[in-house]
Picture 1 (cartoon, rainbow, N blue to C red):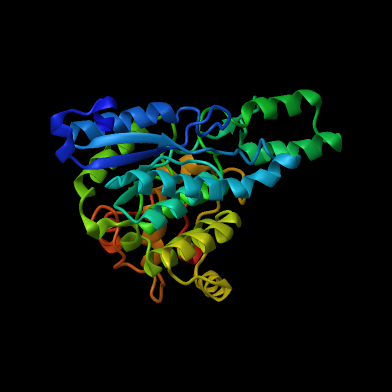
Picture 2: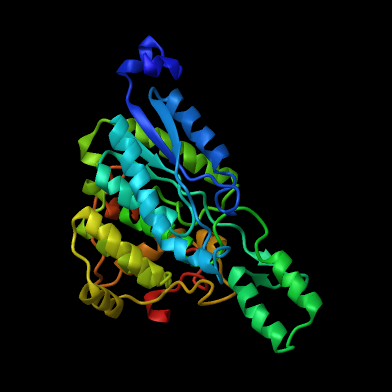
Length: 355
């Protein structure tokens, strides 16, 4: 009776019930449009014979919370998000889960909560924003604003130039355009196989991102009752190894260490400082992205072949440490996923010999 009050009909009760974990919030640039994305996903789920139930988590924008007591709330928000996923999914015994994160602590929080629930799960993030462009034609991102503050105080740039950087750095919705925490974690979701190809690099608010949402929605319907695709069967020791390899190859945020340690703990797999030291000693930094290199952004990486091209180049080298037999959410092994991947621009994603 309670479910009928929510609009369900007789024919719905034999269909898989899928949780749609949204993280819509107006104050985060990477999240203000996620209600529109959730609608696309729910419509596709219904078309594919399942019943979606959307719920929401909180979110904190680390950039806006910076420089005052708000930063005290950033990391704790990750735990609240994890608890929210666990609570809603287990309380209502939903069959499967699709998560729509994007920024800062939201992606790791959702991963942690999903691992506690352990049902078939897929992640599809909101996507990165485009890089900004100043009046001088220089490509910039949020970190350019941080640098501009010091430059202005040192009288190296004018107030007009400072204002131009402020107004140009974040031109659209999406996660900040460099390899900061948000894009790092969304990239690692792709590397771990819990997200589809392109999750880390396809621009937010693009037609290509909308198609990725639909693909993810169709896939969660296909696997909703298939225990092979429970999240702990995807995020394994091998998947965590692959995530950290990509992290080193792309120069991810140092926050990934903080988050991957917590995610590994929830997954019941080992990861410690010795593992990180070993991986970092074996993997070349072949994709230098802002803030490592302020002329390269996530949209550039996507055009150059994306995360798959990075992994394919790493795996082409003798003695590589990628786990190519790791299972991905599509049912393919990582090796199968990468079979057609190639670098399209060696100035963006370099060969290992030219790292």
